[in-house]
Amino acid sequence: MKRLPFLFFLLSLLLSACGAATPADDVTVRIAVIPVIDTLPMFVAEAEGLYTKHGVKVELIPVGSAPERDQLLQAGQADGTLNELLSVMLFNREKIQMQAVRYGHMASEGAGHFFLLASGQSGITDVEQLKGVEIGISQGTIIEYLTDRLLEAEGFSSADIKYVAVPKISDRMALLASGELKAAVMPDPLGGLAVQQGAVVLLDDSSYPLLGASVISFRKEFIEQHPQAVKAFLAAIEDAVTRINTEPGQFSALLAEKKMVPPPLLGSYNVPRFPLKGVSSEDEWNDVLAWAKSKGLLQADVSYRDSVNPSFLP
Image 1: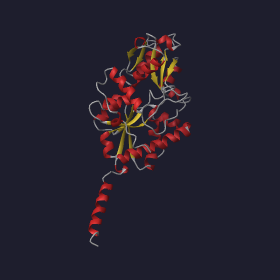
Image 2 (image 1 turned 180 degrees about the vertical axis):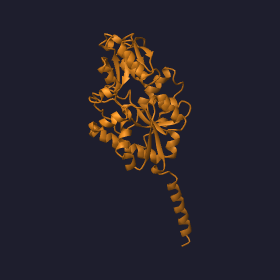
Image 3 (image 1 turned 120 degrees about the vertical axis):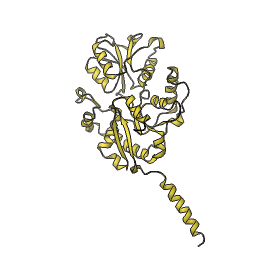
Image 4 (image 1 turned 90 degrees about the vertical axis):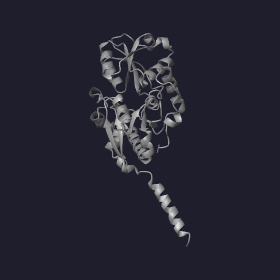
């Protein structure tokens, strides 16, 4: 009987330890979302009640651009987002602030994620004709990285590749359509809209899907404080991806409502397949890192193991 007080003491310690982690439903996960097709699973999870199913509250915060998204994250006004490995590296250049916890989206067979296009007025019909021709891109971003790697795979040297900085996609679209830009890189589904307007597809990333892969990332502070919420969020995303891949046609109305697909494409756009659970490999990370250092975007290495965290995958 003398052991009972000690056993009660141990039990109280265990209960305290178990209560230290905040339950998933005691916090609202704030996700900054830009209007791109990559975020479709997040909206499907919301529309289909999958967050509630997995016991997590989620607020999707619409943002108009990547800089606006990053400002919210830096200010602690958003907990997670969809971005790319390069963006995670730039956040972590001085200290680890973000961790990528899952792939977001990537190209698949027959469905490119990014497209290298020639203006219909340029007379360019083959990628070889792009040597020395200015290509409209957003510099210092995943688009520049991806374009470099796609053209290198086609045998281009650095001297063959010429860029002009056109950060706004709307400007790139207009300049390509007018012929003022002979070539440009566009994401899906705007690549399809450009083709509808007369552009010619020279290359896409369907043969190299990992180059343009997006990732779901969270602030490290949020991960440490609310690990169960992150886990529940990813479980809901996994369910959403399964539903999209099984019946892609049923989400057409959602694409229109969330303005992820331009109105002229709504009747003909085919929803792509989304990747199942997984995170970027160290090889992928190191290739982006080497590229970023070669461009002067980073001066020092950024740790893969501290920046990519697979432990919350369902």
